[in-house]
Image 1 (cartoon, rainbow, N blue to C red):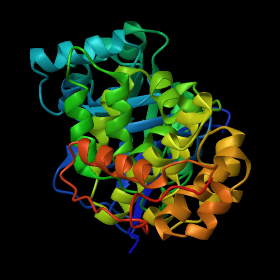
Image 2 (cartoon, rainbow, N blue to C red):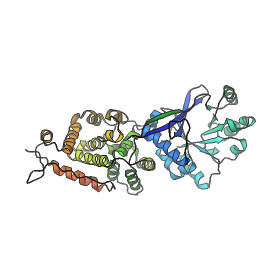
Image 3 (cartoon, rainbow, N blue to C red):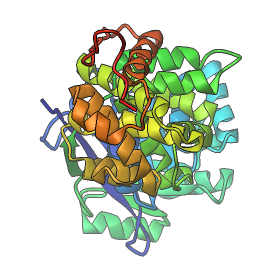
Image 4 (cartoon, rainbow, N blue to C red):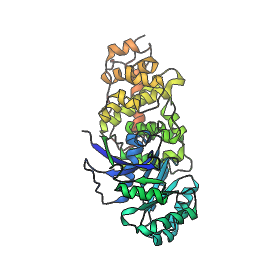
Length: 420
């Protein structure tokens, strides 16, 4: 049964009325308000949904996205799961930052990440802010600020950096907007322009078991790309997430990929590590049978592909072939969210081309369709041995998921081999 997830976005406009970006907001249901006990967990869910459920290019397009964040999120390094360009983390300095948190924020700033000093309400709090020197954006909350201090707040921000953008937050009337324009605010946000827009869709969760195993591997000093690929392959939903991120224009990686391994290399170990953490913290368990099937299909498709240059593509096709069942979504719709090669796309949707033929063999193998195997498989190929090896490989991934061994019809004296 699918689960509906929600996220809201509220536009932030510039002085010409154009959309500068969107603040992304947590929502736990179809109501227009948000309810949560843990603000850090709410932020993680906003990040996971924006990046891995919808895709950043759909949520913010080519604009800027602002996300509320507690300093501990930056201390943990989880911010690195998001792209440094186009994302601004809003930090409310309601409590003084300790030295560790401030150092983490400063280091993230050097890495190219941007921060907004959020919910500024007085000249005194702005002057005492330790984050102000690191802020690219300052958001002044009109409803709780002293009107006579607004001009001096803007002047103080400009004195630190003339390039820092100042946002008038919670603009609710035309009169407030006109006043803010005259005072020199750069950006404007509030109900006067638009209420948050609620977005919803069916969730596409990954297995926390697979994500935690991947996260553990990512902590090693001698990270192995092959092992990383195997761990991602232990859950087709996890693999789908990794491939979907490559499709995100926010990362500057929008290009065709010809295999899961190619996607991992493009993202790089640091990015995969951060994504593993985000997925592990946000994921839920899926059908064990489907995960087993996906892993076996991937290995079997690869081993049955005679062309060495196509084996990684065959592996990816086998793995993704189960995602329509996992997500309860037509394959055509799922593939649209990816940047896989035309050959992989044709194989998944139409069973076309060499990879499509391999997938047909794999499916016939699952159904024990000996007539179809005799039609598709070259003479002399030991299909049962390949299937057994694929099941054993799935077991070796180290997942706690139970593995199911199915048997093809055997001849009395030897495993099933396509007759010569």
